[in-house]
Image (cartoon, rainbow, N blue to C red; front, top):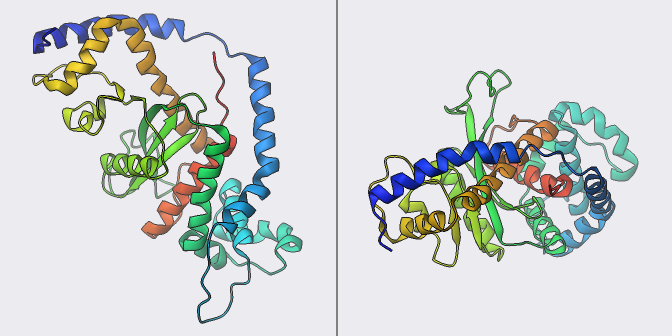
Length: 318
């Protein structure tokens, strides 16, 4: 079957008509029994967190260098960074809160110590290992969704004052999510563009051996250039733009899938809403502001949020 620009535009019209139907069907209430069962899984993850950190740290080889030894062990530094982000306080605020951890840490911790954790390369390696270990235990389906968002650098700039999240006071984050578990499998951070963050997230997912079978992306990624990044083995679920003209083999595959079942295609595509839910829950729990000033520390902060998301997020099936 030959796909033309006219065929594509007819399919876009059909998809628009089906949107309302899908929105009505998606209003079903959540299964409370399933919710409670998933909460128990989160408790088990938290109980195993010290074990995960110990294992992740043991995978890092630390070379002895000149200079004073660090007061905190690698396990302690990683734990403190996770605790800091989970509390959602500023570094100075955490300096007071961390007094409660003095018996565990054995040393006094200043706000400068906490800030330096965000540029600690050893801790970064442990976080990377934690990310992989948790994914290995939970399993990855290969059915993915992806979305990007903006994080503010200042308290005065937020979604209500700038809904498009653009400008130098915003940084870009893209997170690739496994649909079945709700866990992130790839994280990207960019000071320049959402597309740059997207490429970094994709690179991370591939570097840790994550296979992508299906992928749902919003209209920002609705282009032949993006489709070419994925071979024929990946089923792409994107919506063609209304001014589409050049079809090519990439769009031809997508449009044929739409023609084969428009309603099912849209239902599958709208599973990407889970990515938006993930961003929303992350910002409610861990905050929507990046307090760090240096780019490497900003990136580290987003890596911490990505891991904590995987630790706490509950995917409730409807």
